[in-house]
Image (cartoon, rainbow, N blue to C red; front, top):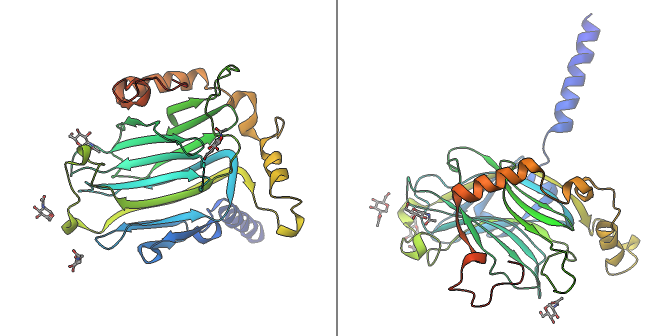
Length: 292
Ligand SMILES: *[C@@H]1O[C@H](CO)[C@@H](O)[C@H](O)[C@H]1NC(C)=O
Ligand SMILES: *[C@@H]1O[C@H](CO)[C@@H](O)[C@H](O)[C@H]1NC(C)=O
Ligand SMILES: *[C@@H]1O[C@H](CO)[C@@H](O)[C@H](O)[C@H]1NC(C)=O
Ligand SMILES: *[C@@H]1O[C@H](CO)[C@@H](O)[C@H](O)[C@H]1NC(C)=O
């Protein structure tokens, strides 16, 4: 009996170890002001004070897949600060997928700004309020990225869908060839972030701390192969991620579009929480962007 119990206990322990998250340093490294980046296990704390913001980056880059993280944003007075979770291919003509959380004075709502850069050009902002207080608890934020669409989600509810439109007459922008790294950062953006830049960062409330944990990266890694097994500049590896028949779950037909449930969720979010959409900003774009 005791032996059986012991075996059950061992099994439970092993399972716990197996599902336990990876440590920060297994997949990431600080890439800006390392002395402001604290980490322990899978918990990461990013600090902004009057000397610096800070950030971290993944060690690998990815082409398509899903990246998810839980974030607890700066509590109390966060005016002037921006916390970001994003993916970027970096360099000339870069592609980028952004979540930017714009802080506010105590008690006033954060704004989540999403943006998409294609070949170096962004200007595709949307802004939303959230249906929860993102400073009280950890909430999950995720990006699903495949050849058909990019979904930005909060607690698994889509807040934005950027679809690759099938129009062969137009060159519609969509990031689908450049592998991206995953990043997190906190910085001072009081020239624009809070109430249009009117409210400045109050440095007596520093340090401003955002916490990240529970990263789940289920994506096609590029550059994961040892250099001596790489046949070229990475084209083969990119092909492995971008082929029509990769067999990855994010490439299945079900993930090529929103499910009917997600369509309803997105409508609910748009109706109740969307406060800005570049596609409807006629003052800014005399000619409507092609994808709108
Ligand atoms: C930054 O903050 C520290 C601690 O609050 C303070 O001692 C220092 O004077 C500040 N420096 C500047 C340039 O404001
Ligand atoms: C991407 O941008 C570069 C300039 O950075 C330009 O030369 C190139 O033609 C662009 N490619 C596409 C597909 O638009
Ligand atoms: C901050 O609060 C004000 C007042 O409620 C609101 O207008 C604004 O959208 C909020 N968010 C930011 C980032 O300015
Ligand atoms: C800045 O924060 C300090 C401490 O919380 C507070 O006493 C002060 O009134 C704030 N300043 C402004 C301009 O809000």
